[in-house]
Picture: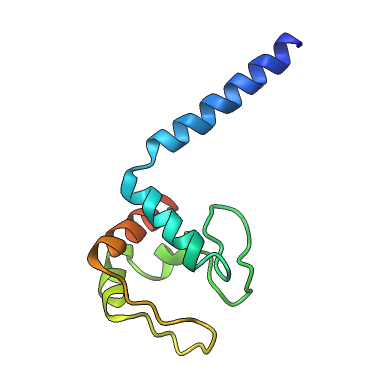
Length: 106
């Protein structure tokens, strides 16, 4: 195997490990929640478009709302008035996890 290929693979593996290690457990749980419940419509990463054009990418939410102010809406249930947006009411731990994940996208 050429040395350049081995070094490329090693750097890629290190980068993946470093970014995974940098994420807190709350952030990882928040990402899992978003992937399971939100990614069908919203982009939950730093670059792709949302699958549903009218669903804002999560990486832009902080431009409209201070992330910490979303806690109350998540606890009471987000109701957007949009017919395809399901109503979510999250538990305090889920709120913390999702907010941790959203903050990581800034």
